[in-house]
Image: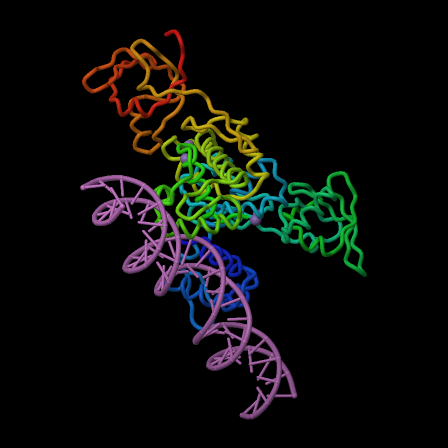
Length: 221
Length: 221
DNA sequence: ATAAATTTTTAGACAAGTCTAAAAATAATA
DNA sequence: TATTATTTTTAGACTTGTCTAAAAATTTAT
Ligand SMILES: [Mn+2]
Ligand SMILES: [Mn+2]
Ligand SMILES: [Mn+2]
Ligand SMILES: [Mn+2]
């Protein structure tokens, strides 16, 4: 139905649409896919022919309902495979993305349904991102950046904004993993760095780190 | 390193070399890959450039040591994935091939090593075919066609020669699965059909069926 | 050994996906 | 609003892998 390349474009547009409200620009897609704007224009025309995006010259693109379904299915596969790699094959969360980029294009409805069952119908991937259901719907969990919490507030670490290998390995080194409780002990005014309690350990982290960690807000300490 | 298409050519040549002794012909490769002889000539030149096959115009091709290693690694991945699909994801043996044809091209050494471990280092795939080890070696188990056994001889069913979906589903219907003991009760001279005992069931099967089932010979009844 | 049949290779074309360079449209600035 | 800067599209080219049709080599048959 759709080629590997078409699927990658649909996925890129899908992710870009979540941030932006209007149409997605040619340049934004080109940057996300590390390709050239001219290539994007060509592909976008083809996707428009196939009725998975709406496209008007110079006006950017938006996914159709069909396009959104296809994109969500690719994202679903990507994230289920990431869970598989971590839960069953002893991968670390910083190693899974590259392999999932390949596995997400395997075509077999039975495969993905059975994988889902085998993994116990997980709702989130190893980076805390939600896994779309069969119909492409994903339920958004309310979350806030660690950097927005005030002194003495605490919450559970439930995801990362930057899921680059480097950042994830940094978190490993610091002992910061999903599911752990984090409490703000102190905030430095001049550089917005934080002193936090994670598990039983005290850590000092920069604002940049705190701006890439998601917390499920948790009233009380 | 190698494209999906290159890997498929190498695998085809690998399988064809196991049967034939000399070089593999252009037409044989074309037929196995459902493509045209002219396409094969083009690709074989490229593979020769990459030093994975030896090629002399009009003389057919043979794999180099490197080519054999690459091909065996693809076969290894194919068969490990087939085991995964049957053992973990409830696929039947007649459903796995198509999906494994896709999965065999996923590139990740860690993935395949961990999959191997996760599956308990299996030696054979769901069709009884041996799984090459990391170095591409596969140990051949002595086996004979059911059709070559004589009256009152028996053995364990350990593989199929034809692993088409149709044949495998036929075997399912008859209750013939790998691991079962089969005893020849009688042989009909005029059509070479067999009367066999499999498990506790008596069956009559044609010579065509018996010529596609492998048995581990088993002296004594 | 010649002729006929078959196999293999070559020549040229095509689709998918990408690129560079240049033109056109849109957005930002003065 | 006119000019400049940025974004987007077009035009033309390239690579990979495939195809058809025709030429060349090899094999088989007479
Ligand atoms: Mn990922
Ligand atoms: Mn992820
Ligand atoms: Mn198979
Ligand atoms: Mn198999």
